[in-house]
Amino acid sequence: MRRSEWALWMEVWRSITTRRRWPKLSMLKLTCRYGDFDLVVIPAGSGGSPDLEQRAHRVVIGKAEVRVADLGDIIRSQEAAGRPQDLRVLPALPAWARDQHIATD
Image (tube, rainbow, N blue to C red; front, side, top):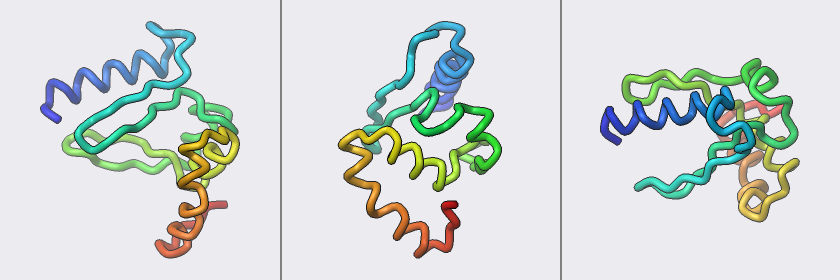
């Protein structure tokens, strides 16, 4: 992704999460060259950003630092959402976390 594209996506994300422009938007479905992914404004089974930020991890992507939800929070959200695409990958996540020595509770 070129820098200008990254800046545009960051502005879109800030607009979504602060609900300035799209107050009723709950999810944004995106496709990029790496595949499909969803950006969820308030994940199921969570209290939203304040709840998730407590356990989030800082990750550097290119020149940007982003916060990524903790794997335990992701698992709980997928269980609560119950969407078919979440339920398909859900059984693999706890096993992968154990293999990587990642706590999920």
